[in-house]
Image (cartoon, rainbow, N blue to C red; front, side, top):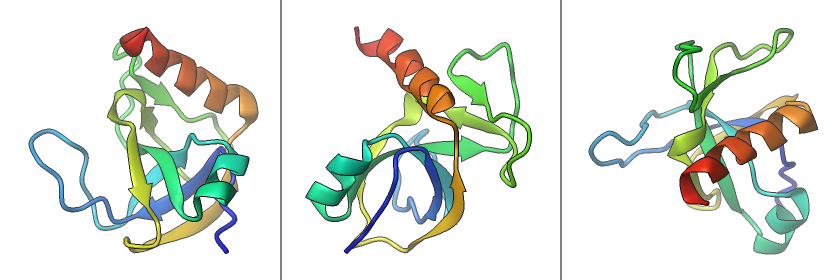
Length: 113
């Protein structure tokens, strides 16, 4: 059984992609879906990719707080639902703070609300 937590940073193969979608064989991603959902869906998770680029002027790129192994920004507008049963992935063992994860989700809501 996959036990993936909301806020966890995982590395995942996001390929194949098309157009301007974020790609990568071992792209770090932030898990946005709630832990209970992840357990119930048995490997289906909602993630958003992380880039090493930091651009504070781009509101959809949210800088990761200091003190974590992964540096860079979460790309809030690139949310994807992925099946971890069919893609290569591994956890980094890090979980970002709830307040930060909530802020990423709220930023995405600006696009869809």
